[in-house]
Length: 161
Image (tube, rainbow, N blue to C red; front, side):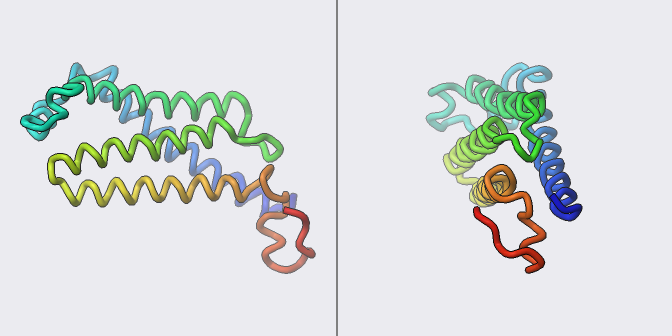
């Protein structure tokens, strides 16, 4: 791998691990460890909706916390399994990103139920950006050649996939 391939690869993956790991660590921690049910403003927002009864606002809040914590755990497992190395497939990292899209979708559904259209639009953007991160991971080694950046300059003839 040329230095620019290595540098971009390392920076992109470090950014993904930090962004996703920290975001979902604190989101899950707030709901599971620090919280005991949904905060009063959230409970008020969802009162009168079907989510208030099925599964219940506190249960939904806890389920979200579990999903967010699971995303963080998948990121940690990915790190422990050394998936950040260029020759390692990134199954746990990709699973974390896929679960993040699913979680953003659940959050957007909740916002949609209460007519919070601005929140829905933001969550749709987060889910889409996470999809872009998944695509980016799949464009890097081991899914593509080690010269995934330097070959773009035209110095090297294009290699296989």
